[in-house]
Image 1 (cartoon, protein in one colour):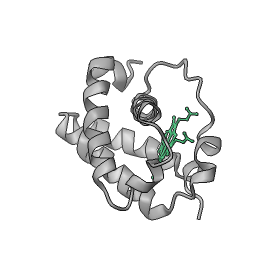
Image 2 (cartoon, rainbow, N blue to C red):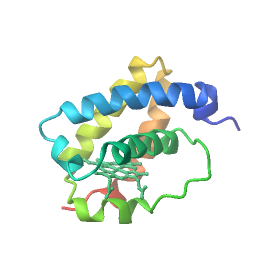
Image 3 (spheres, rainbow, N blue to C red):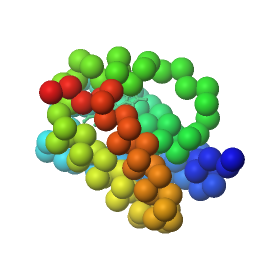
Image 4 (cartoon, rainbow, N blue to C red):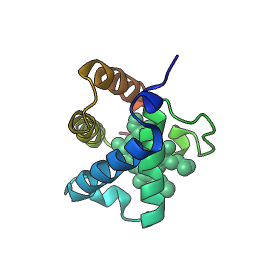
Length: 118
Ligand code: HEM
């Protein structure tokens, strides 16, 4: 089965989505502090892995488990919801079909338990 990553143009599209998503996340007063300790490179790396992950992209993910990567950040349900909303908007703006956006948002929702700690 073709992944959404391939369907929508692989890394070229992911890189465009990452830039948009990143710009929005860091502009949010309630989200930017989560990323303060992280260096630019790590943030870009985060966004790229995040997007590629939810699009079913390259399987050779070598980062930490989501629970381990986020456990120390005390991410609230509200922050998670905001990040998810920004992602949804970014995907819609990138021209992704609504059915595929719904698939991606389902995957994001399923990761909520590993990311949120409150
Ligand atoms: C489904 C939702 C999410 C996914 C799939 C995801 C994915 C990831 C991935 C793959 C990493 C890198 C792990 C590594 O390389 O070891 C990461 C790190 C990180 N994530 Fe997320 N993330 C999600 C939600 C969030 C949210 C809601 C926030 C903040 C509000 C957030 C903030 C961060 C930060 C700050 C890091 C860097 C941690 C560090 O370097 O110590 N993430 N995330």
